[in-house]
Amino acid sequence: MNTDESSLGRCPDCGERVPETWLLVEFKRDDGSEGIWAECPACEKVIAPEE
Image 1 (cartoon, rainbow, N blue to C red):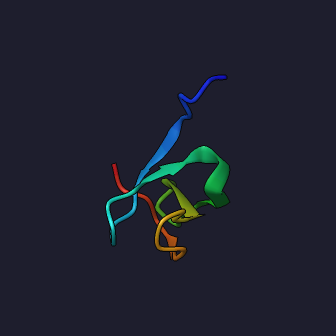
Image 2: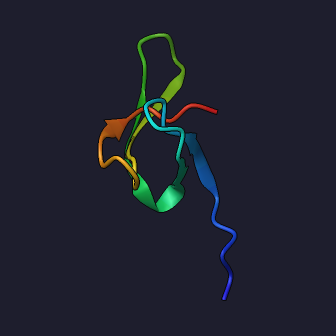
């Protein structure tokens, strides 16, 4: 079994790694950059993952 999942980054609240499977929304900001919202598997909040 492969346990090496790709990560979206870390939760800004608890620091937990957020796997790609927890991605909720991808969007493009007004300045042209891309953003994402995901659910943190540890604290169950909707967050913008940080690197």
